Image (cartoon, rainbow, N blue to C red; front, side):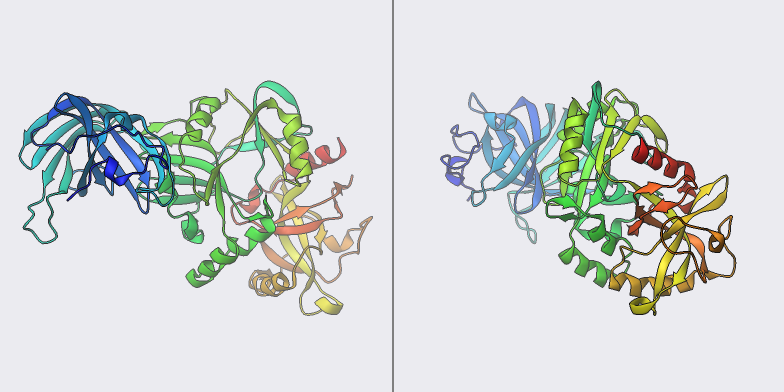
Length: 501
């Protein structure tokens, strides 16, 4: 027999409403009220609680069903709904945390609320018409026959009769990009947030999670710990812009993330999940509940994003401050973060475009450069390479900008040689001969070996010389979310302006 509401709860420990509920009414005969709500409940397992206002005598109560998969959104689907104890009417506005160890312990959020009408009310059957912001339609609810296999008088089936939701198509979006600028600033009407040192990803969350990289590749399988991201979303569908990061001592570490970026084998990925777990840091909301938000001002998108996620170890929302960029930049520098991003609060989202409505200000100076060759190693590195030869595109020509020989671990040196050998070519991909280069710093290029220009390396450097050469470069990692043709010399010059300006 089902216990009543108060019999399952210790109100000295749980923040849930402590109002008394006098028994449980029969939904087939109770007088309907006007309101409904659906709670998203992250207990032992995620489920949704449908609550209909009905009357116990003259007292309004919430007749409730636990619906593991939520109300179906498509015709032909039948979802289980388990009739549970009636809840007090005050429970309709409850949102918060039920302590661990208490009945239903976990996070509770209001998924939807609104008004409803009962169209049919018969023994073992209800037809309800819901008018909510996320649930707008008609659903049938039918009680199981208790004599059926697995049947119970508390078990019901719910299925969709009519869905009135207006749904815009889920867009295919290329990420909006920020323009590099020199100095941090304070300014009214601007938002400032940390620049996350990871892999850019758009997360499409429906009844599953799909992660799309900056160059529109599906990278979902590479990060299994993010597979349930959609379950943390309070919404039917959402597209979220963010960054996949690997944290180390409280800071994002691209060096750690590098060990995961190119993994394809399921066993290797499973092992990497344990040694280098990742987090999805969300910083923009582009689509929610059937509505395209690209033309909505950023400040409004941010407000919706703040309400979107139920907390979990693998997801967080990027913190934002208004107007005070210099303060955040100083904090980013003190914590050795990559930098900050400034965004105009009124800006719209421009897919695939680099805009001055978004500005990035770096604490370190890095560039994405194309690997066009390598030089043989000496001494302890005689069985590997000594340096990678790097370039950036200028007017469709790959301009040589120098070589990098530091920043490589022993394991990476071993992993890279087979890859470099597989890309070997007899043709020099650069627009000049690096052997004839006369560097002011470092060793001259000897005996170069060429490769097809398909790898993109991240390099940190001190400055760019007047002749367009890197000074004191250090290798930081590879990235597979950027096309080599997007590594431009003008972007490298922008980095120089920041360094010298």
